[in-house]
Length: 369
Image 1 (cartoon, rainbow, N blue to C red):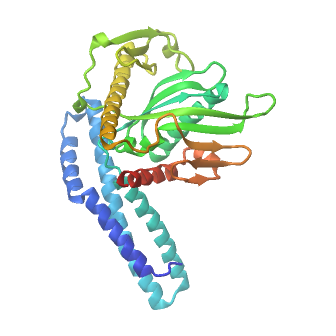
Image 2 (tube, rainbow, N blue to C red):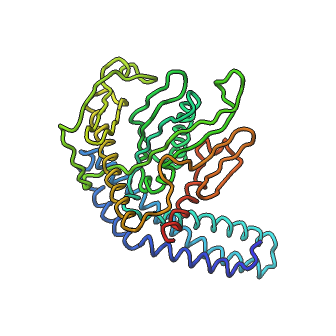
Image 3 (cartoon, rainbow, N blue to C red):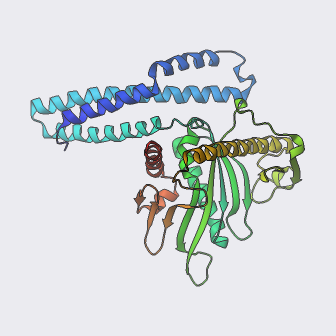
């Protein structure tokens, strides 16, 4: 039961008003009108990729606007419900109102997290790469478990994904995988997953059933756009063509269609093997390479600014950010935010929103410090 519903509602109204200001509802409505005009153009679908971006942005904006307007109506309705409970001295109605208050607090809290994503690239799609680390076959299996975790997370949210490349390990699991999450603010949402993830469990590959610790690295970068101007000299790229490997369609596995690009000045290597066509794979690999080079440029700029500021205390890539323990107890714990849960299976099935939201809030606090 809420101690003082009137005060709770007043606080929620203030928070929602702040969210509405940050989101700029008038600006959102203007964007929606512009996007609706684009959707009405008869030849929109002549360029399917551009059309999908327009319709996706339209759907996302409309969803955001509906979400805010719905929350505003729910606050108004809840005030009336509390008044009714008070007038009729109805305990059941008061219980119903308290339940709705708790639900509203969660919903507005979730939306508030979204307003914290204000970084230069936060609105972008996310390019995610997973690499197995120390731990042998268990690490390769762990990398595949993480791939499933993130794909399930995206599926739960209705976010389209596309796997660009999967390099399978010999015994089990994967050496690496690269995929894209296509949704507004996917990069800002997932960027906190960047780092090393540690798994502790009884190894299913050890005939003596010993406990094994294994590691996998998650690399998250924003997808490049035409306006990014990442110039790549063709002479700086080595192109290798090879036959795709691992599970997949027959056509994929029987033609030399997989493409590996090596950027000679930086040593960055990307591969793509998800398409039948060599040209399609090269185009996808170029997008990944551009994203890697854009992120490299961004990191260099950040490093230069940090040098001018005298450095900062931050979680560097290669350090452990989260533990997933299956034995001798069950616990997932983020080492930055202290967020933890004993429901490990739910996390492995993609229920990581609590960790993501806590990290976004933590990052904003650290940035403001």
